Image (tube, rainbow, N blue to C red):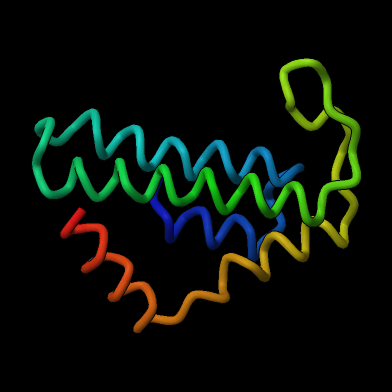
Length: 109
């Protein structure tokens, strides 16, 4: 799994929920940390991207989610098509320049 594949899956509407897409993004970060040495640049980038993703995802769910939460805080209702579209659109909001700046900033952390 890689980010390009996730984007393709979103474009082709292969995910049944935003949670499924989020799980694949998490898998990318987990694999990167698993297959790179602890403390290496790639490991640290994946770790920082993971933290940033979780913050952004939590905000997205809070801002656009209308489902009820169970006691563990997980969304228990299927997101609407509009929620899915909003999530997909939010993934494309970051420009190449912003991504470069983010990578450079996280590399210094």
